[in-house]
Image 1 (spheres, rainbow, N blue to C red):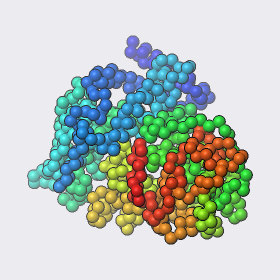
Image 2 (tube, rainbow, N blue to C red):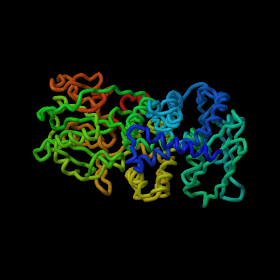
Image 3 (cartoon, rainbow, N blue to C red):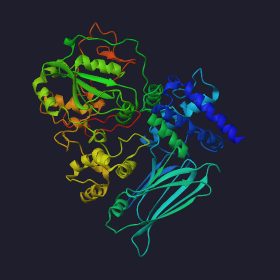
Image 4 (tube, rainbow, N blue to C red):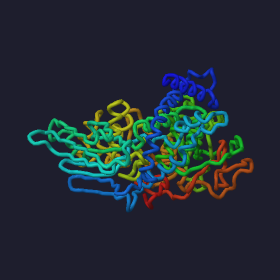
Length: 595
């Protein structure tokens, strides 16, 4: 009977896939179909967990972040930090509460659920997947850190009392980790942890049969990299907040955002609404073919596309724009210049890196890519300051250089704690670098080590080398090195490293638009760019243009099926060292004065 039931369930799944809008027999073997099929197959296991969750909910508070006595503890050699959730929530905890509530709110409605042609089972299956509010939630939540001969306690969603201790073993260089859990909220619930340091990681599941855990760590010497890491950062405890199957679902939904399909845009909207409280209104106006004379060298074009890479940039930086390009005159031809990388889904043709297209050719590509594009002309005083010839010389000097992968993350990580969108955390950032290094060392060098070498004045190609240099320079961890401002003058092995918005600012800088101000374009994010007070706010919108971004009637939105938004547009007067030490925590992304 179970075999027949499974066969029937699989048949229902295939039927579900075929009835999803945009799926036909001819593309049943395409790559995105394979991912979708895998997603719903995993959902079968999630259905099996539903009964346990039903009983668990009867014993769990309605708000998972308001558990009685919950606390997050950081214990170091001479420092103890306890955050009592009951009394006052930290910004990250408040964000976690919003995520939990938003996810709960949307748990019965996903990007493709409630489709009129789908049955009840199909809608139930799709409600667990194709759900944008799950994207990027696979990152573990930091719970505690404990150094040698110290202890820490904290509460988790299932087990209310958890105690971890790190002690040195007599007569050896080893240390012992002891982790005990008690007082479960339900006999059926469990907690899943990621434990470790930058040299080792252990997955540990806590349930009624497994409440005690012991790990002996053999250190090669008291001065080894791992010993120094444990002394300075401690042994870390991270909670996989959605459990094993829920984390797998989160991974699948994150991957789906990067593959073009009928789910991509709806999932992106769900994500932006749930985690950033951003909604977009439909726009019925098509492409606005502005006369060429309305475009001037130095003008900024803010673009947006609703897919995984761009909403990830929005969530990390608080931006309402995902990509930045500018108008320039190159060899006498009015062009659009940008720094762009190979994208997924693959909607933009090669070449990549710093490139220029003739204006109309770029507009054609942007329409095919389904961009939102808004024209932001420079204010007269800044247009007068911008020297097109010098700007063009700079563009020629960097044409063909690769996209700024070397400092991609470093542009917005400006503070020790207030630039990490939950559930990502500064504690996990160090572990994440270690994980990338283990999986793909060349990628770790490209994305992290090259930029860290610039800050440490080293030439390391391994994590151990980076950590040795970090500790020797007096830093406690990598996050303290990461916040050192990037310098435009730094040149990497393959040339200058500029992400899209940094490229625009550096062209303006080369053209003399900022005068003697000390501006590092490589510290800018898309938000920093469109909030910069250098745009024309007095000239009326061209009469040929029928539409504008929300609340900005003098700007022209050139294309896009949704109305663009740019809160705080054109409000910050340029000043030296701007955007170098700015917090950016969701959902408000409040900017401190003078950052």
